[in-house]
Length: 206
Length: 231
Image 1 (cartoon, helix red, strand yellow):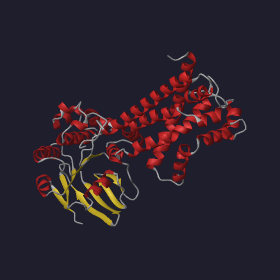
Image 2 (cartoon, each protein chain N blue to C red):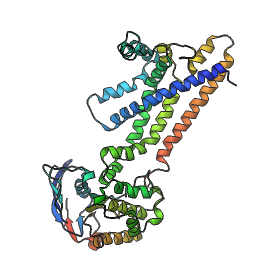
Image 3 (spheres, rainbow over the protein chains, first blue to last red):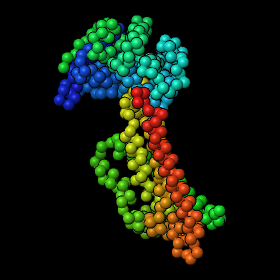
Image 4 (tube, each protein chain N blue to C red):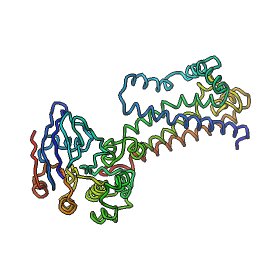
């Protein structure tokens, strides 16, 4: 399933304009901080509206001149830099938040499968603020997968982790790419991450 | 310790305060949400109107209520002819006066807690399939809840302390509108009422102090155990 993106958006005195087609595997959006990588993901997710252009996933149009699907209708899993787990819900309720809202036909993973895949069974009854950075990021990935997405957006998911945890989470991301065959748009400014994970690289410069 | 008459005064005060804050709660929340989240024409004016009872002499607020809800006032006449209800000299009128006086405090407390919500959680909820409405009920409201409860407690304390607007609007009628502060005021006018004044005043201090401690504790909870990861 290809992700076809051609978008432009003015933010302050800067214009973010990108055009690329992301094939299967992991497509890294690579570039220095401040070139608008996060804004691109936000536009794909529907949290920020492009001034013009189009966003298509497979044969579904998420955005163009006539269509502008709200974020909840885009079937996209967004993994934020900080995990962004809901602080007032336990891990289990965080994982099931999107799962319970999804159309049953769109779900392709059960809670048990996600828990086994990510090795987070011992965390289910914990509160998010008691988790380590690596644990929180695993739960965030699980929450996004359980939503039944067509693709994943990852915004520097390793940046808040120490070296050992980075390796762990990179392994998880490789397994999502290779075993689940889910297309991933991955934002990073770290060359080593990109070299290890990326199937394709889109280089952005300011 | 308290005489039956004094217990009656306490019960009436709790009833007036309770009804006042429960009725005000949804209105105050809607106002707080609008002021915190939306930009619209007249926003500054609305903000000022909400805060007016905080700075206006309470007797003026009471007089304005009297004009509006009196038998010949625009609202009073309408209530009378459509529902056959009058708030004049009734405990419901005392609750209305208390509600108006508590509104600014409640809106302020709720607005702070709404502004304190990290809106990125709402964005995350949307990407997980939540409509704006669902995200409000499951994310925004629970995150603002400690502030809402704090506002409730604060508004309640303010309500049972209401004096000026109440006595102006609905007078000082035993068993109907004579709440704690009005009873203290009345007892002060009577020779030999000092013992009653002391008991009721101590009770007022205890209620107010308890409310303040409870609301402070609720506000702290927002920033304590439930803080997002990384804090």
